[in-house]
Image 1 (cartoon, rainbow, N blue to C red):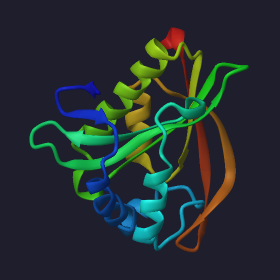
Image 2 (image 1 turned 90 degrees about the horizontal axis):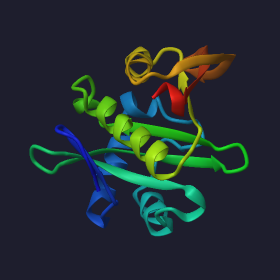
Image 3 (image 1 turned 60 degrees about the vertical axis):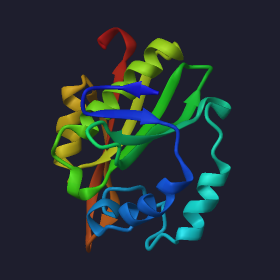
Length: 174
């Protein structure tokens, strides 16, 4: 378990699954997620995802984000891919809509970054974020991530095309 003063990262529990599905199906949250995650997302699909979890398998980790004050599950983050040859990890995060803007996501991502650099000896962490997700971009920049590139008009949301921003953080910048 990885802990901060606001959140801790822990293994997923089966009782998190219904809340995770509810959070992912919130239009405010689903707007920010990868188009590979179907909308609406079915509860049975979330249980299948949960059953497939294996912490650390192939360097992939999925952590539940839990609020320290009351133990409430509020989102998830993790390592989605690891390129071991080049020592690059790709990460992602989501926080339920009603808990956004309270610093939980920034602290959760900070804990994840610390884990990756100190425990996995990874050289670089990267992520993709949609250009309209200003709050997330600000959070990532606060942690030291830098914009490395822009995939122009890569994502179609609400009748418009938007850019997808590639951000990265090197171990010696952390």
